[in-house]
Length: 336
Image (cartoon, rainbow, N blue to C red; front, side, top):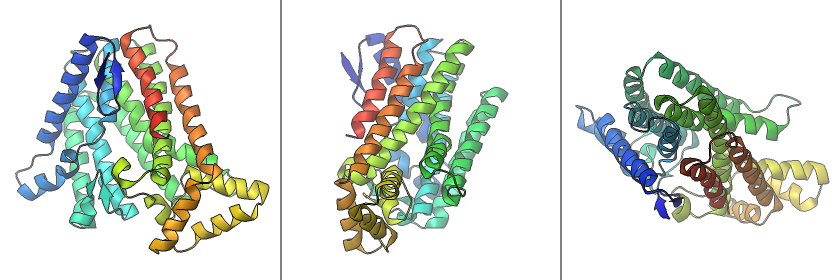
């Protein structure tokens, strides 16, 4: 049994391992090629996060989904480059919105240069992704466009917040389905679609990706509270400082409203205060790490990961399916 990728994904079949490793290496080359510009400064900015590394979670899913068809089909690697470029572009924009200072263990683009450079670099990456996509056919363009619409809608809904009477947790899970689940689902869809897999297989893998994407983001929510910067590659409690209500915070507020415990209400009041103060931010982070709301968020992560695993049931039993199932475990492991 060998290991593939940063998740420590175990692969039992040497041919599958070779395909995945070769595919990911080709994606890496494709990312560097796609982020080159005649303007050296643009190349430097566009490759800033590419060279910082990353999990390459979405390209990995493209490669595994492609195992259910012709795994050597020419559109597989370019489609993986497209989804990773799209993901990278959103990171540049997210860091501007969140005023983040660290991303993948290095200064964020907005911290290294400024917000304008970060936004425009994200736009440049979107443009390059679209250029590659145009060669993959109109159906691929449509799939990506629909996913991108969902992604942006999810971001807008997060910014706007839930409407009156809407359960904040349900609203947030819908947000994650758009912001994260959509692009992870497309990763699985592209891999299967470009390989020529059956439509039923494409649908199954798309459903799997949607659920896994939400689980992946929920694990990130837990990590934002529970990890240090060495583990996560970004500053802990970034969302907390910016007042972005991730799932642990929403579960805390839900519990405070339901039970009315003084300590829960006090912690909510602390979170509502000015967390730009480092001491207050550290106090809030420490309190949340010890609160049952964090464990509830972990259980929510497990639930979505199990739903992703269950979605794979109709697929034939093979090493690629086993690897996709193991990814569910890997996502949960990230959340502790």
